[in-house]
Length: 163
Image 1 (cartoon, rainbow, N blue to C red):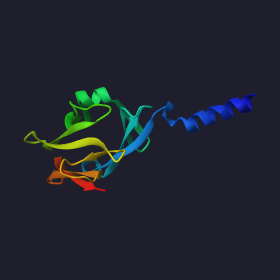
Image 2 (cartoon, helix red, strand yellow):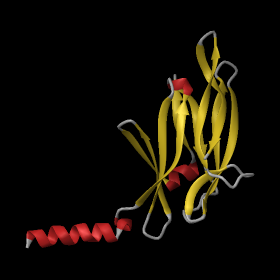
Image 3 (tube, helix red, strand yellow):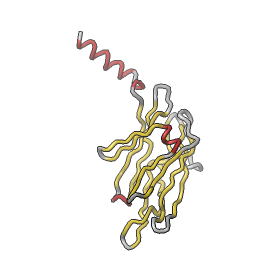
Image 4 (tube, helix red, strand yellow):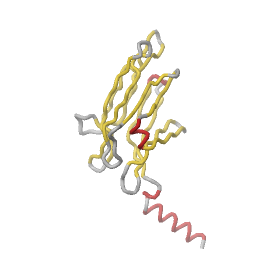
């Protein structure tokens, strides 16, 4: 009897992967200001294919962000009590995606910030991040360190690496 229950549970999970959500890799972020620390970002979809959460993985550290939090905006990286990397998607929709704005501290001395915009959308039945003028999804981005006298003072640029 117990074996049947385990088998039926296993079969249910195998046939119905949407029961707990489907996770898709969406982006790798290499952070030069953090000694080339690598973050992996995923989206988690429910059974109907709607985005429910974003997941950020760094080593064994996992953080989950509800779509609502992404819409409102959230700080992804803070150093020395300064907002270094901020992301928001005020027009994001769980079924269609939207335009994501990433704001980054370019120069901590002058308090200068810059922004880039990426499109979160589904193309060919696969979710991805895209530059607005490109059909190829973005594979990874590199946060290039802005240094002064060997000390990191911000992010010089965000280098986009297509697939």
